Length: 248
Image (cartoon, rainbow, N blue to C red; front, side, top):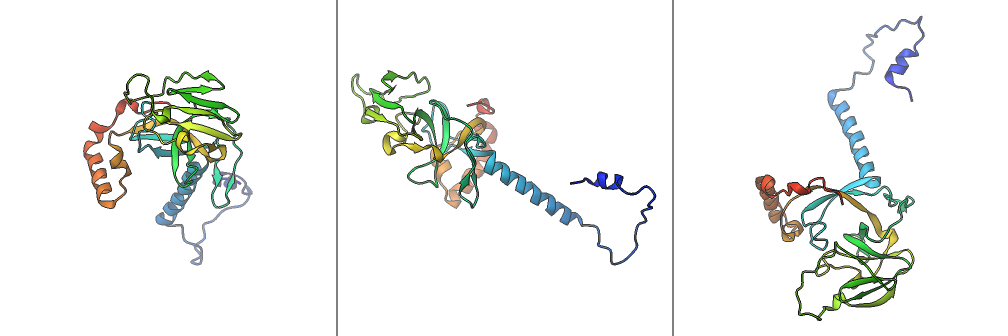
């Protein structure tokens, strides 16, 4: 495709271009027509970026605290994880291999309309067990400095979620857990995540606002408008500035 300048340069040198005063000539596009065209192109570009490359997302629950906090707004990388082509139910090839320790966003196996954020603990072919809150992969204990336990029980007493007999993770599946091990709905409860359910991975925190889960999760119009109004009034005091731009 030639640009406007290229078309002008390709005019015959001997030809004189004389403006036409023919009243039937098409009028120059108005400002609004030009603006609407630019907006349409911008919308298409943004849609393509959101669908295939990256997406902004917000964390409303505390299952990943100490690593990711309630109110963290994340920038997700989707391009390497085989983004889905809208309306066709086709996916591009997945270019990245998922490893233990990766933090991923995925479609919840029991309700694919919901997106969950967890850490990969085991991948296909791994033998996994949990004993006294310690994760074992292929009979070896795993060092997990990011894992947090808030429950303070008497010595030698462990909740059922901290005990799990050895299981074999199926191929093309993942076993995921939240870093907040005492407050996370994860594979210990509802099983494995198919690799095809993975949407992407968080890259960094672009904004973090300190508010409880109940405020983020309440979708009723009145409370939601009141919450947005409170954000406007407390933006500077409740924003966690130290987390802005933090890599994950």
